[in-house]
Image 1 (cartoon, protein in one colour):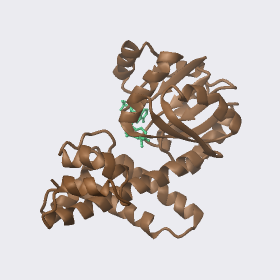
Image 2: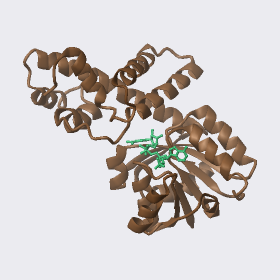
Image 3: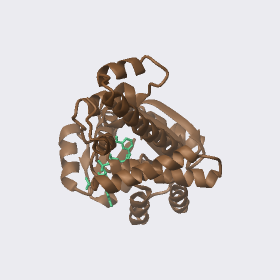
Image 4: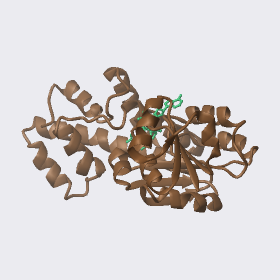
Length: 290
Ligand code: NDP
């Protein structure tokens, strides 16, 4: 079995590393030095772009569906029937379906297979994957994804993986924003932030944000740069598309998108970690959460 991985960013680099330990793995990255470093570190093989088409299963992990679609167009003349394309990008259901239809004309199957668990989950081989596509394609991809995932769920037909991921990340955004607001009010009134978190984390208001992110990134004042604010804002736009297509009531999830758009504009740097919104709220309040 020959695999290929395109996009050795914060997520792709460690994922492709796990893959390369078990399967022959070709790697390509726009900044080619990263592919060469990967080959040295994990025993993968850095190749020119057309060569990835020799793989039976081809993975992508890029910022948005637009880059994936662009690469699919570039690779189309080289791709062979029977290839399976597994896209780990947090992307858009509609564009993914269009890309899949284009690939299908070449006999190439496609799964949207979004990731969760962050960079730490990817490094530890404990990522979560939510997959849209056919049962048969899912069964083919599963053993390869098992090299880096602790939980793999086939959530439905093509596009469903992207849709579930978008809603998941909207929930992350709601929790991050809401906890930041609540903690500011508590600290302003003299409550110790660490003790407040300790109580919340043993109570019904806890979340991954309260249990992990907030202590590790905000209270520590480290704000380590692993998941860019711009990528979360992009996910909230995708979620808005999902809500629009469904036509179901969603005032809260629509609102959180607005909050993050304002935050992105005010912070003026989309590359900072998404937890920087807590710092923005601190600035508005003239107070630090510590
Ligand atoms: P990074 O910005 O770290 O990496 C992006 C990768 O895409 C790099 O390899 C970059 O190449 C490549 N790339 C960007 N533009 C192009 C292009 N036009 N053509 C070819 N390659 C390109 O992103 P992440 O790894 O953080 O995120 C990747 C995806 O995973 C996103 O959709 C994100 O939302 C999602 N995700 C991220 C998580 C996280 O915690 N970071 C968690 C879960 C999902 P180069 O090295 O040359 O810049």
